[in-house]
Length: 253
Image (cartoon, rainbow, N blue to C red):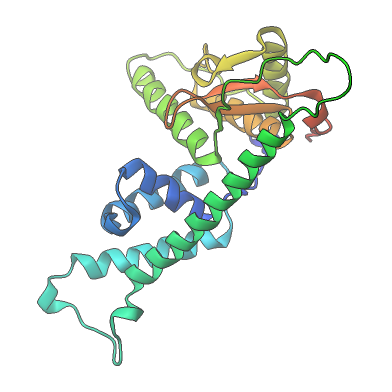
């Protein structure tokens, strides 16, 4: 597989990952546990690096910031040393929370605009005569982001590691990204839609899972497939994207 490596550029940044992790904690942003948040953030960065995902430098900077905040919070109150002239407004924890709140505000506004655009597409202008109108779609599943997909594949890898520990056979790691792209396209072309776990049915090694995952990311990036999540943190479904949305077939070397 090393001869067919795809460096998938992560278009969602560190603030997107922080928001994702806050939602998983199911608490208000102002009440988030920074120690837990820092540990989870670093875990995700390590997962993505192990999966050969290309990370922007901002992820490493954010990890450092979180580790600094975590180290301050772990110190006993009487041992915390404030910088000269430091006041509450310069607290790195609250500075990060303010940035996160502002970022969420923009994300929510963007989501509202997308929702209005979708609703506008479903508005039909009345014309003379009788016009048949198809029923409107009942809701729209959420697009699964890169962090949802990373979490799902790491759960698969965890289960696979347990199975591998119980068997002694050695599985040849001969999987390529380009080959898996062809397999996924054929399977989705026949089925139209598969759950994330169904896509990995039959995978016998970590190399095969990673090759399949990187192939999936490439096809999602090219808008040839869509990854949707009917419920928050629920099962991810993979479906063929509408033809008009698709970009040219990927070329790998």
